[in-house]
Amino acid sequence: MARIYTKTGDNGTTGLAGGKRVSKDSTLIEASGSLDELNAAIGSARACSPLDNVDSLLEAIQNDLFTIGIQISTPEDAGVRISGIGEEKIGNLEREIDALEDRLPPLKNFILPGGSQEAAFLHLARTIARRAERRCVALSRSAKVDPRILRYLNRLSDLLFLLARYVNHCRNVPDLRRSREE
Image (tube, rainbow, N blue to C red):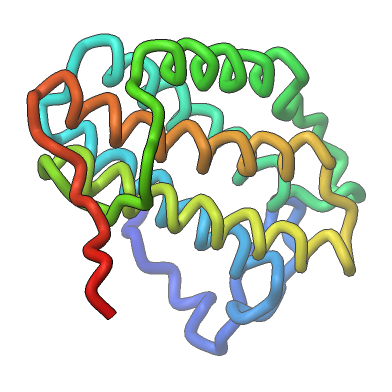
């Protein structure tokens, strides 16, 4: 088995599928790195022994994020066919959002990230999802990015917010309410 270090990135570049090298601070690598961080934050939420239905949903999302990472990191001229995120994945997120909204009491004020440890990680993942979306928007200005990726990430951040609230609700942990002292 080859070692994890290759020394090929010591000059500040990294390799893409097909052999092309790009700077490690390129918009592509920024987007890819944000997706990787998002996946790790979701993994942290899953490490908190989540509810079974939440865990299976988060596992599917982690696989989707891996697919998105491959999709944006594979140049069109690499000669590799990537099946990316389709409309059905976005529809799945929307159905989950609708179901959670039906189960939760309506928000009457702003909440702060936190509550249970699992919810705190889901809130963290939500903020990283927003950043990943911004990085993919920036990438779309210089490279082709499937617009479904942007829609998926936008819906995902909403879903992660609701999942954090849902987890707190199921565990009888109150959401942290924003104080009005200013």
